[in-house]
Length: 298
Image (cartoon, rainbow, N blue to C red; front, side, top):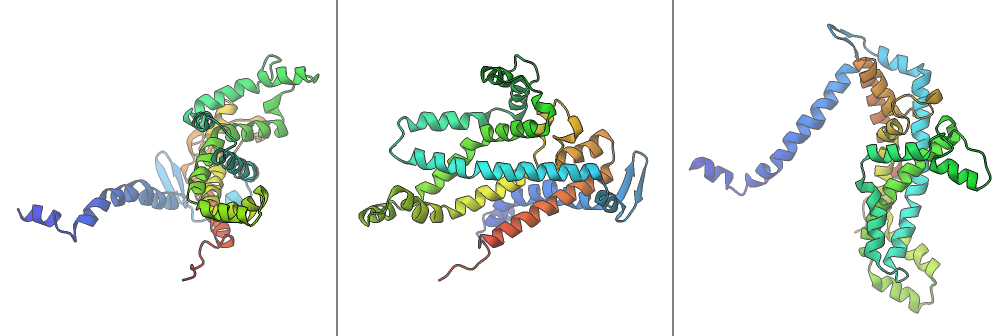
């Protein structure tokens, strides 16, 4: 009876509701994070663990392959941001206008690629960008009068395939974020602007863009993290974690190589923590530049 009264108490009830989240957060996030920090200072062998202080981090500073992985991840992050913010925003504005008929059908078609698994998508793109003369991309080249090329063995064309895969999968998802943002804009602003003689571009420049700022910040934040943590797309495109001259190797791919393939868990933990710090620094800088930490005027 006392226990039932305790749980029905208005003071206790909020804590009971948030307890599952706190427990899962502690078990699946806090504990692994602290374990990773601890492991990054160790050399872990199957039968022996040795404390090596900063040796793993010092090794990372001179690790040429790790630097290549960072460069590839940064390149991928930048290009996905350049494409996957303006393109979905434009699609969302078109969907929100009266220019398009059967909006539900177009939204479904654009969102459909996100429902396919990365494994299936990666395999499809690997076949499309195969070096065989009969692959779709080489057939397209031949139709243009060009010779077939080895798409996934050249840096520029391989990166094009990776970015195209990301664009195909995530344009519809980001478009839905922007459509949700557009729905929160009061139509009275547009009506007032039309009365004042503002054209479509001026309404977009002075009403839509400023009021979509919270959506932009959200999409940018998740794009930075997604770009830096990309792994499975590359893994599936090259049917493994090895690509010619490491052109498809990312930071998470390098973590997987050292931690899983070579069983160097201490070194892989250091790689993972460096990735976490890089993502945090970039996101904090962009949030400061976007004014997210400024106090709102009363």
